[in-house]
Amino acid sequence: MILAIGLIGAASVLLYLWRRRLLDALLALVATAALALLAVELRLPGEAGGTLAIDPRTPPVSLEGVRSLSLKGDGLRAAQWADLPARPLAWTAPATPALRLDFPRRLALGRLFTLTLAPGSEAQRRLQLLDENGQLLAETRGSGELTLSWLPPLAESLVLKARLLDDKNGVLAEGPVPVVVSETRPLAVRGRFSAPSFDLRVLNELLVQSRALVDWQVALGKTVTRSERAREQIGKPDLLLVDAAWFERAAPPARAALLEEVKSGAALLVLGGNANDAAVWSRSMQLPLQAQPADKVIGGLLALPVAPLAPHTRAAGAWLGQDNAVWSRQWGKGRIGWLGAADWHRLAIAEPRALALWWQGVLDAVRVERAEEIQWLAPREMPLPGQRLEVCALGVRGKVRFPDLNLALDWQRRPDRADASCVAVYPRAPGWLRMETQGREPARGEVYVYAPQDWPQWQAAERRDATARYAARTPAPAAATRRVLPQWPFAVLFGLAMLGLWWRERR
Image (cartoon, rainbow, N blue to C red):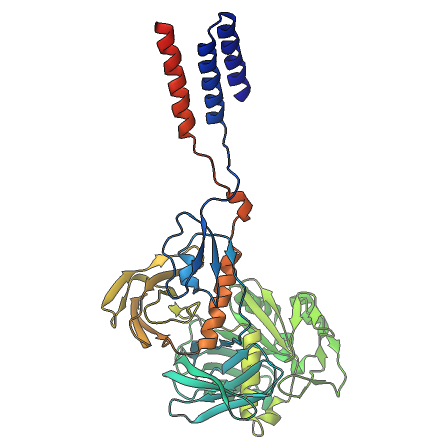
């Protein structure tokens, strides 16, 4: 296009010069230059807009005309950065101490509550967990990352307190730790066993004590079977339990039916302490078993003898082992676990809690899950009064109502939250914020809103993380944002030059 404009313009100028009309040639030259400049995009030296210094106390609502940003301190919250378009950011993370807490906001009764404090420090420190009355629940000490555990005894909403102390009992940090302990649907278990043992009796007692629905059958002989029926009807079991002897002695149709049930989504755990025929497991589940030394002991939480037959390595084909002697693999939509340990009944009296926690880890390895219809998702950052809070949940529909805010909102889908629906609210005060929604049945939830002075070092860490993520959003370096020269003056100049030529031609 530029070449065509230049050729036509040059021909016009030469024509006017040949006819000795110097003023007309000058007007033609001006019109040609203006049209050529109008067809191209010129950029001026320097960059568009200015640099805005952000005050974290009053974040900007618009970046119109702003080329880049500068910032000092910890930065802004993730919700505040999400409202701003990407701009080059000049910011250096402060060197002042910060900390991060990791703990479950919602917990099923019977599960272990674990609190982790990071980053670590070379100095000796103590991390304490206190109840609402200030009584000590759990404590750990040491250097580096600190982790403590506690088993809630009741289903309730708690606001615990965590405290970090130095080696001289000076308080380094403290603040609330909210957790909702809820009762869930009892675990539905179907067990079929061919060899009675003390291990089975202890396992049965552990399941019954955890309120599980147990359908239990143990073969005492060729024609004698001891059965224990569940107190309620079990439709689809959450967990299938068999010992290796039952599977090896079962008829091929029974094995196929069991594996088909797992393929459709069930979890199967095989107690491998009485396995005798490695070929059966290799053919049916592609599980490579090898004879183990009689004195071999597993490590981890409990020291237990290894079963006579077990995989020789942690990675055994499609099977992956863990420290608690569980090898597991995916099987269709379900999962199969092989427990290569035995004689855990010996710890039922000496270490009952440790045994219960070990069994919980075994079930977690097989991914035994009791899916709730509605699941409330934990907020991505600390909820604070007056700050936007994103509330998300799975399995909800219709509206969600906040009685404390006298507010009802429609659930909305979010592309960055798979299968979840979300709403945004602004809490007014610290404390529990109650929520009511609808799934197949009405459901209630709650989220804890922290006070502005709670956990300042944790708030600083969250702001720094959010600011670092915003800095990574810059789409291009600042040099690519140079100011574009406006084109309307060239259009005006071209029009005036052409009007001048038209007027002189009319004379």
